[in-house]
Image (cartoon, rainbow, N blue to C red):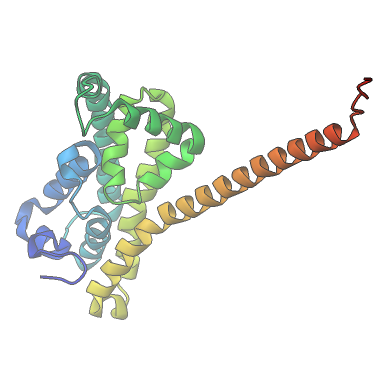
Amino acid sequence: MTIALGPDWLDPTVLLNGLGPYMLIGLCLIIFAECGLLVGFFLPGDSLLFTAGLFVAAGTIDTPLWLVCVLLTICAFVGNVVGYYIGKKAGPALFSKPESKIFKKEYVDKTQEFFDKYGARAIVLARFVPIVRTFITAMAGVGRMDPKKYFTYSAIGGVAWAAGLTILGYFLGQVSFIKDNLEITLLAIVFLSIVPIIIEVIKARKEKKSLLQEEADDITQVMDAQLQDDSTQIIPRVER
C-alpha cells in the first residue's frame, strides 16, 4: 500500500505493470473511463499519466512518446463527448424526480451558473481536479451547455492534461531524484492537481465578500439619505 494513493491496485506503477503487454490499451481505457463514465471517478488519472511518461522514458512502454500523447488525448476527449451525452440523455429522467435526494434539479441550475460564471476556465481547470473532471462532464450535458463551446475547450484541456502530464513524466522521470522518490512525486502531483480549484474557491469567496460589502455600503447610503431627508422636513404647527 502506498502513502500517496491508498490500495496497491490504485498505485499507478502496480496498475500499469499488472496490465502486462496490454499496458497502453489498458491505460487508454482507464483515461476514457475517468473522463466519460461516472464509475471512473476513483481512478488515479494524474499520477497515472505521469507514470506512463516515466514508463515511456524507461522503455517499459515501447511506443513513441508522441503517439502515446496523441492516443491519451483522444481517449480523454472522446470520454468527455460520451460523458456529455450520457448527462444530456439520462439527465432529464434523473433530475425530474422531485423525491430524489441525490439527483436534484437545483444541482443542474447551480452547475449552469458555475459554467456561466467561469466559462471556458471551468472546463479547462476541471481536467486537473480529481473527481470533478469525471462529474463535470455529465453535468455539462445535463445543464445543456453549448456542445461546440464545451467540446472546443474540452479538447484544449485534454491536450494540456493528458499530453502535458505524460510529457512531464517523461522528462522528469529521467531525473534521478524523481525516480528515487517516485511516491513523494506522485503525492505532490495529486496535491498540485487540486490547487486550481482551491484558488477558484478563494477568489469566489473574495468576490462574494466584496459584493456583500458593496451592498452594505449602498444600504447605508440609502438609510443616511433617508434620515437626512426626514431631519430636514418641516413639521407643520397644529393650531388650537
